[in-house]
Length: 566
Image (cartoon, rainbow, N blue to C red; front, side, top):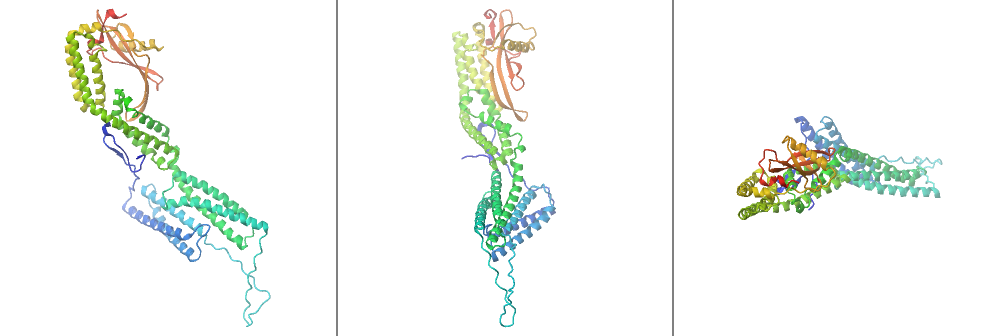
């Protein structure tokens, strides 16, 4: 089931990613700060508007349509209902005038009041109760008598002259455009009726569409008025159509007035000028989704996986903020809202799949960690008993197994230091035990060590060497650098968002390690790794970081015989 944005809540199962269930409430605020008298007045106004809405609903039911308005007793009933609604609205208006307009409930009631007032005007336009004046019949100039000395009877009204061919054509065209006006007006009325509970409330795009349809209706109305205006208004056939034209125009005006008021309010929600950070937040949402893609690849990068686990809570916090910020656009189904919702759905799907794979992986970590240590112990025993120092070298089996265990430990620590503490202590203990066993082979291990690989092909090699030497000089002034090795062929780029100081910041940097071969004494040299970082967001500036300080205790695999340095 698609979850998507939801006004009631945005919930996500965090599972093993470090945070418990997370739900955010996005609820409309309620009135606050009103004193007891204002609360009482607000209650009275709410009741008055509610009763006015009931009267208006009843009036709509008896008013008929613009093309066929109610007549006779039905029309009188409708007028009575409208007068009752207006009276209740007048009561509410007085009460609203004394209430603070910035209160949430007062604002909501004012919106309902405005809608009801527009509805009353709309129904009155349908009725157009002002009946046209009848043509008075002239007196009989022949003075005919009733034969009994009474007053003479008024003669019958003269029969209207027939319309000629051209006039009949004009009347026919006027009727056609009246029907067209009614067709388009009916579509607009259907949208407006939904504001009064007749279906789901229209979103902003529908309001804009209804205004466009109303514009088309008005053009049809103008054509009807143009044709009927060329005909004698006193003619009874013309008068009927003229009344329909007038009623249609009044109804369009009432509908447009109401739609325009709604359009202004919704523009405060959907106008992109109110969302200056939309593009940045959309990019952030997409990038945050990307970190949960393809677990099978991410699991091979322990540092990256650990970062995802440790920052998951902050990620969800950002998702909450983005959801709250752009929920109005989503609810109004704007193009930007649909785009944001699709990105949100993608985030949900990616993260849920990632979490499921992570649960399975985490459950197997302790056993896999212990297996690595057991294998390191086994190889160490074999190396000592068989006198094979290469087992303890930089690329030997012991260091390889320790490396695998350390990668797993990186991920375990991301779930919390308390959870990882036993594994940290266990790794340190095994390392210490194996180092003691390897002391008997220390000289042989050093003798077996070879110069690190030198594979860098970039044209900025001299610049990198300079950065590394300057960094080490701060640790050991006057150090004699005998050789330089750069094991990687090129810089490795890292582009991602990282949580820092309460917010996510874009990171775009590259990394490479320079290894300085520094003279240690008259027989040995020591490998000093220097990590270089290039910040692509700050003019490609380069910083250097020493991996192991001058006072750190290094194992035999960090040393070389001077005679091996060429």
